[in-house]
Amino acid sequence: MGDCATCEAPAHDFEALPDSYAYLLGLYLGDGCLSEHQRGVFRLRIVLDDHYPGIIRECAEAMRELLPNNRQHVQPKHGERAVEVGTYSKQLPCLFPQHGPGRKHERRIVLTAWQERLTTRRADLLLRGLIHSDGCRFVNTVRHGPKAYEYPRYNFTNRSDDIRRIFCDACDLLGVEWRVMNRWDISVARRDSVARLDEFIGPKA
Image (cartoon, rainbow, N blue to C red):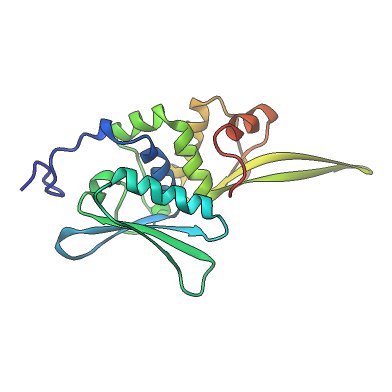
């Protein structure tokens, strides 16, 4: 029996988690879930678009860094243009305490104090994970009479008020200006803010 009453592991040193945890947390908040299996083992699953092999590799590597003694799996979802990246561990509910019954947008999603510290330190990686899961970078075209102007922008879409707030708070930490576009969409369109996100996100690949 370990020191943790939840997963029976030795006492968690959350402050020593790799920086890539912030990236994986962003992916989890967007497209991830935990499911319980036998003997208290949980499965982390993150579903990603198979059009972006770079994101799939980065997700699998982040899982590997977080749980180096556990295997990761990457498998296509039958009948869909999607890939599931996953791993198994008893520690997963401790590492992702936002796990709970029901859909994320139907319940409160609040970061713990230790997650706040980690994501404050690596807000860039948290935003990268959130954009890679539920966001995009695209070129917007605006027409004024016969002239057309093109400029890049970022968009983040999530039905959870709490997750959108986590995204906006991370933007604030990095001086990235954002706007509420509608009920579920946050836009980053100012040139200097787009350039700031381009430093660590850029187009999906």
